[in-house]
Figure 1 (tube, rainbow, N blue to C red):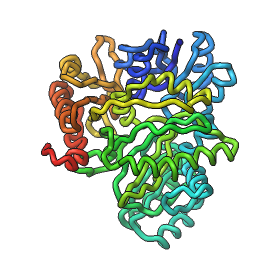
Figure 2 (cartoon, rainbow, N blue to C red):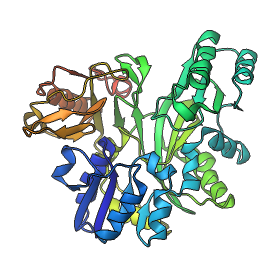
Figure 3 (tube, rainbow, N blue to C red):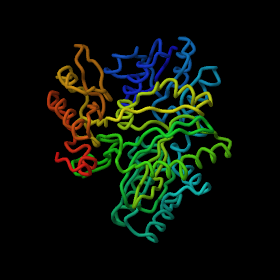
Figure 4 (cartoon, helix red, strand yellow):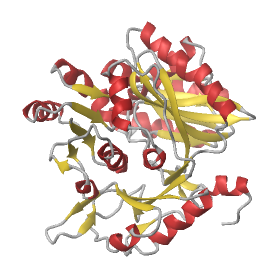
Length: 429
């Protein structure tokens, strides 16, 4: 098959790596891709929001299957357009992608189908949102309804912080039109985890869980980011938790979306809060997480292309998914200043040496080659140093050994990725 992957981040590099392992893949393209993806795919200079150009390319190249990585083209209807053109695509329709495209829509679905989640309110008026916040008190969570690149969430520990978040999102338009409507939620306590299922409209198969590290600094300090690292499996997601999440969250959502006339096909990413063995749903995303995808693809033993094809064609029933027993861990290297302002175009060296560390693969997120052929940083999150090992501690040691070989003074990373799992295991870091 000729396959096109849409996207340019670490998630897409990981997907290209996994897709290239499939005997079903004859030729692979990635639009727009990054410098690391050239190892596996031919890059196509088309942006993820250029829906017409992506469809035209797929038709012109006789692409058999399109794997849509990020949420934006899904919300814009790329899967619908491809299907209408007779090209198979992996990812939900625009109507189903509203589970991520509108937090209000998602919360209403959860409420309608009795899926455990935080109590909430939806607001298009700032003063009404503030009145709700004052009535509930802090801590409280303020979210933009629309897409904000993973940054439109404030976990406010005081009333003043929550009220300021409303002003920033609705008044100052910090996230543009995404903040025209807000969702204000009860603050949930517990331990967060990321859970993934693959869905064909009727059947859902559990994949694996991972644990992300959202805060920018060691010890889970500083502002939220798109994710500074992850590991899989997540010890907090026990087999009992998996059963509860499938029964109480994933399957009711799949049935509910079908009943709404918006059958869901693709990856369903459940952000969970787990407290005393009871999971509640924080939010849904309609694609693989980044950086969680990196560790899932490192552990996956099944043919990812066959699984995605089966999901897109409504034939997942009877399939199983095989995983390596060995844990995987990814450490994100970001540009100094991220998640705030950061420089672009800084040169990264030592990637070859780092990639030769046992069990390590260097996955690119925001890179390109400059005119001299050198790798330069083009984004905030730039590299995902992904390692496998017999234990999380071993995977962590390998990842940091590789990082110490990378010469990039303008970059940084957290030095404690995986700490929860290592602490549980009793192994000192």
